[in-house]
Amino acid sequence: MIDYHVHSHHSCDAYSTMASIAEAAHRTGLQGFAFTDHLEWIPEDEATGFLNFEAYFAELRALQAQWNGTLEVLAGIEIGNPHLFSEQVRTALSAWPWDYVLGSTHWADNIPGWLPVAFDDGIEVAYERYFRELLILAREGEFDVMAHFDLVRRDSWAQLQQTLPIEDYAGVVDAVLESVIARGKGLEINTSPLSRGLAEPCPGLNVLRRYRALGGEILVFGSDAHKPERVGQHFEQARLLAKEAGFSHLAHYRERQIVGWEPL
Ligand SMILES: [Zn+2]
Ligand SMILES: [Zn+2]
Image (cartoon, rainbow, N blue to C red; front, side, top):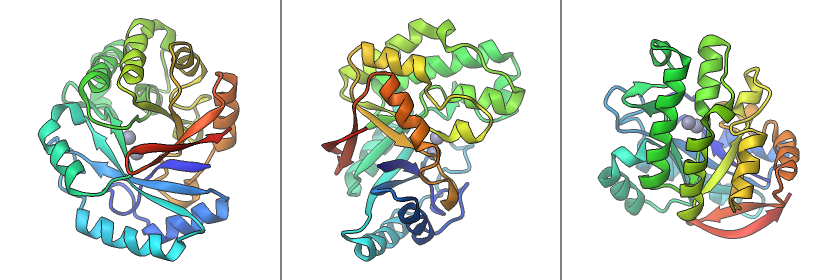
């Protein structure tokens, strides 16, 4: 299996060298992984301006040479709110040889979803605001795979120890999934909520079933690891969940194309 969501010290909120992550991924028995360091442009976001593309690719190329034939190391990126910065996204994606692009909704209506302020007007308002922004990402954003579909669940759990049933948002959930499918994009099962006290990853079984029922096929796993020991974490649970939802394969990306399908 490949972990399609890993942060190194090229992200402002992670501190591990790329080499230490590769060693951990190899120890875990992964076939490979993608670095997906943060790329943001919202001025108030501490990730904005942090990523140095030259340094990222220099360290990555050395690692790829070192692990060649043993571990697949992919050049990925996690772009925050790409629908708001289409010109900057185009420039960054054409200037560097990316293997894989995650699209994320970290901010919703210019409010940072992971901070207490997101819940100042109540949990329902936060969920509605999040899914409104996610729908714009799904319809207009440039990415390969949508990251952490219902991230607002992880955030509301962190802030309030509370989540709302995803079934209350069935209309917008369907609209997002339909856009993802129609545009040939994919979903990840983000396993990080399982390390934070939530019973289900992002997304959980009901969204995955709905994605499959609407014709969704493109699925990957991502740990969202910010430390080496978290790489590939909870992938067995993700595998069982994906199978239960009706999936039989995971997509394998390289050079921003699906180059193969790995059986679950
Ligand atoms: Zn994210
Ligand atoms: Zn991430």
